[in-house]
Image: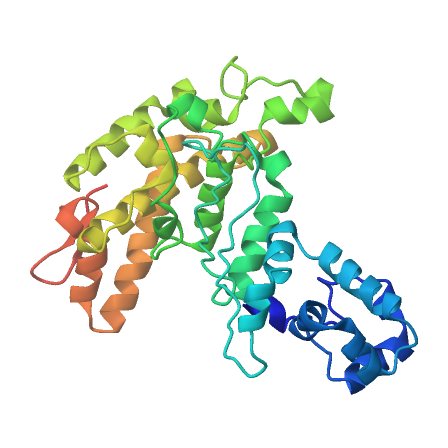
Amino acid sequence: MWVFEEPLFFNGLLRARTLQSASLRTSLREAGCTKVGHLMKAKATSLEALRRRSNTSSIRILDQVVKEVCAALPESLRAFAEDADLCEQWIEDGDYSFPSLEVTPAVGDWHEGAGQLLILRTPHLGTFQACGKKETYNLCVKVLNLRSLAGVRESRWAEFLGPDSTPKGSWRCLYKLPVEKLTADLQWRIVHGGIATNRYRAHLDPELGEGCIFCSEVETLEHLFVQCPRLSALFVLLKSWFQGLGEEFSFILFIFGPKYSAKKKGVHTLLNFLSGAAKMAIWLTRRNRVHGVGSVALLPVLRGLLRARLRVEYTYYHLMDNIQAFSHMWAVGGCLCSVGGDGELRLHI
């Protein structure tokens, strides 16, 4: 019955040319005809009576208003509004509520697939009355960019690590302490392919060449952080550290990070720290080779980064007289370090 409550004037749903007349609107308003229900009841009973009350010169004008209003309504609502029996049941002061509208994205024939960047399951808007501004904006942006995002993989690593590999569940770990923001940003760029490798730079400067500066292979993102022969000793070392923490090393775990769990918070944050430090060592030694300064020995650089961080952290917690907190964060499983009975730091790297 809510359709009979629709206002006749200044209503985007009812674009009737005749009602654009200010004088006609005034006449109908003075006659008490301001809603669709008023107009349809007058049609069902007597338009002549409405003409007299509104002091309209011709009944044909009111008949034209009825036709234009009905034509403006959607077909399903038009049949409802023109039903004389339903119109008779409508009363002026009745409590009629607008039906609940479910808001869903208009995506046509597009179907969500595994491993795709675009996900329309979230946010779930629900009813029009309950959907929030932020959620609505988020979903509108996805729908507006549907054509350009369709088919884009969630991560460019899917081709290398397998179609079922995904960084889902690992985002919470990438930026968790004790990882520094610079290292976390590097990890995020690696996951999304935001690294200017020689294969990419060669398109801008052909003289540069697209070969790896440590071997003769083409330097892609996968080669730089996983496939380069110089990394084999690094992965052997990481594998031993991961096993010391009770986890099996894999390239998926190394690239995307662990899927964070509160029950294994200490292990997962340390795994993420080790992976981040290894990636930073790879990146720093590459940068040193490009600029011709600093060490390019991967394992010594990694061990230097870890030892420096452990000593700084130990000194801080020692000054705070809270060695127990240091052990809880850094000495998990005695993998990287431990604290002796005399309170002395013992490095195992």
